Each structure stands twice: as structure tokens, then as C-alpha cells.
Image 1 (cartoon, rainbow, N blue to C red):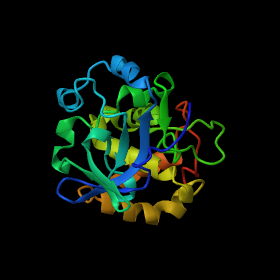
Image 2 (tube, rainbow, N blue to C red):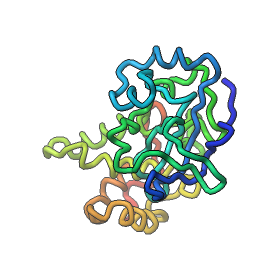
Image 3 (tube, one colour):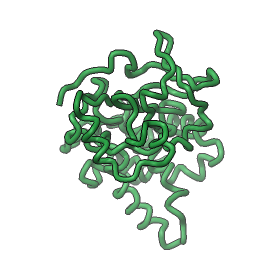
Length: 244
């Protein structure tokens, strides 16, 4: 598959909504190569009404989408913005036609099928990366991973630890995901819980002020010390008995 940037929308550009508010940065650009749009449209099973309306019924816009990452350190929601929703692109950033409050209503939080299966669609991906994260250094599995690829591993850990207590996965998922996504960043790869914990606490409190660190720390530590590979296997990053 050819890898090249979209000529205007590029990774790391800041993105602004219709009200001029910064909403995040471009993570990746998914550009369909000539002739691939029809295949992608046929592969879309159930495009949302909003997406279909905005893209002429095909679920596509122009010749691709770009992935928008939001939140501090890019750990917020990710959206897949069609090129047709872009009002302008300058050296100062990407400017959209839609306000951030309407992103969910547009269905942009749903990953298009042609992004999920690029090998089937003749897609050109921005060279920044082919996926949001890479496996920790030293792991045997060199496959580039996504949260969706490893989520089952953490859900099983949640079930073993908390399921019998009647806990809800939706309450714990942000904690497991925070630990896993942070561990993928180069500056944290291979670091023990004791080493990383002060920084993790600062980041958690900035991202999730609604949940106190002392409430979330045990789950975050479990995820940190039992990371998943792309196959869902755990590979410990630190001694489970290490002090907090």
C-alpha cells in the first residue's frame, strides 16, 4: 500500500472547529487512492444517517478522512473527520465547518470501515504512523497495536478482579485505557510503576478530575504492570509487589 500524506491536511496540524476553538490535532490522514472510493462505499455496512447525509449517502467525504485526537496528550476522544467538513487549511491549522458540540451527532466518532481495513481499500495513510500506538520496546510482538486490539485482555483482568463485585466495565475502562495508552509513549516504555507513578498521577488528575487518583490508582497500576501484547498476552513491566 502506498504511503503518502494528503497534500494539505497533515499530521500534527492543529484543528479548529466552526467557532474558532482548538479541538485537537491531526493524528493521521486516510486518503483513498483513485478508484478506491467505490470499493469503500460498498464495504460500509451501516453508515449513520448523519454521515450518509453529509457525504452524499456513501459514508465517504471527498477522497478520505483524517483522524482527530482530542484531550490532553491526545488521550481524549478520536474522531474521523471527512475532508468535505474542512473549511480551510493553512499553515496555522485545519479549520472545520462544524462546531465541536456537533461532532458526535455527525457520527464522526465511528471508525469508517475503509480505515479499519485499509488493505482492502487501496488507502494511502499519512506517514506519521499507521496506528495510534506502537508496542513497548522489547516485546516479542512487533505488531502495531490499537486499544481495540488489546481491550479484551484488560476486560478479562477487570472481570477477574472486580466482576464478582457487580462492577461495571464502563467505570473501569478509562483507567485501563489510560494506563495502556500512556505506557505506549516512548518516554514511558520499560519504566516501572514506582518510577512512572508520580507523572501518571499528574496526568490522570488533569484528564479525569471527576475520579480521584486514590480511587483509580489500583486499577491503573494493575494495567501498568500487566500490559497486553497484540495477541492479548500480558508482559509484566514491573514487579507486582513493588510499592506505590
